[in-house]
Amino acid sequence: MSTLVLELKQGESLMVNGATIRFKTRARIELMSRSRFMFGKQIMAATEATTPARQIYYDVQTLYVGPPEGRDGARASLGARLAPLEGELVAALRAALESEALFEALKLARQLVRQERASHAG
Image (cartoon, rainbow, N blue to C red; front, side, top):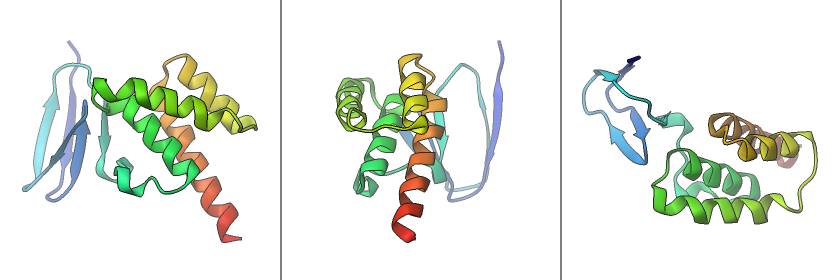
């Protein structure tokens, strides 16, 4: 059995299989089984999904680490949000989603957010 050891600082958060954990003290934890997890800076709250790209990211996040009962809705929402979009990044995101490579899809969605931010800044 493979394990993963994570060291987290006081105040950091970690989302594991849909549960957000905030560390009150510095901690070293060992994940003994396969788990889907995200670190605090990667986690987007629903209230932060205020733009089209951020909504896509939130939906992908829900597929990756969200509760099972929210995944069907996130998948349907993603389909509707991605349908009118084109481009290499969107094509790569669709391919990652179709192959269930959800961590890769999350990284691609993060790129969409950065791309959207850059287009609005300039």
